[in-house]
Image (tube, rainbow, N blue to C red; front, top):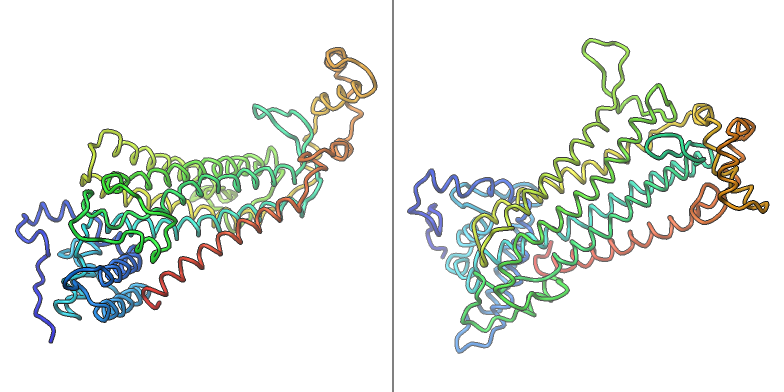
Length: 457
């Protein structure tokens, strides 16, 4: 028979309502994203409790099985968008405990044994981060692949390479596109660093000082699929917030690279350049000027990059003067990293659509080649014929009028070493993107396997 339960919050039922509302903040909304992971962490913890060697079991193995089944039902409800976190719950942890107590009676009251909400939320956040980072890596690769496809489609069409925004040297559409693709794919290294930091288990540290029970922390680490355990309980408590900052750092760097791509697309699609044509359906109009088709989406990417940098700065500011141990300031890190993920992942998907719809105006690209763009190439040809570099440099500089005879297509075909206009190896990119995708899928499958084993969903 189930025990009757109260709707009062478990820990703060005497707190002034205004104070409670202020401290609860947005957790009832934000924590919906953590519900499945909270259920997973609880399932691992209860399983471990049932295996502890004590004179009298806190939770039997049969009871642990009941809890896991009930947690699986909660997780399924959350996946369908049906699980409710009430304001008087404060957060997902208390909401799950409330529901389990309603459904399992006193057994539901046992699940928090040996835990604090400190290590509980730390586990939830790390599991959520791992899942989100892998999805972000997939979307990053998809954008890089879109750029590579765009480059391959337009091949060796000449494009003026610029430094200081001024015409500099011959380049090509493919070199430009795959250059951005490679820069974007390189940002996965930063995401991987954030993933590795998140892939460490803090569970069992409780409020940061451990508990007088024989918790098997290695067991929960294995059940949850973490690569290792944060050994020191105090360190596990202090690590809260560091994962969020590391992820925001990676996201802000990725967004900075995406912002540079957006800026190039804005400039190169201007009527004065007209190298590229933006998809009309991704441009917006004007309320007063009928002829306008504006690259608003690309301009907003610049703004979003600034926002994510601001989120990183806010996260670092929260941590820089915080004393050791848990402090409530850390609650606000949750919104910061979740917002950063939302902005970045949306931007990746939007940019991939824009790139897939890009057109190239080949004649505009060729027409932009002023004679000076060929100066370095001509000087190097003279070097190849035996002239010392400095003499060749001055000879070309003093006779720039001769450069009018050069041809953009010939200049593109002349450069064949690795990574230049005719030295882009598409197989290199294809292999790299495939390797990244394979690694992501393997880890996603491993995470799903742990969830399935613990929750059945």
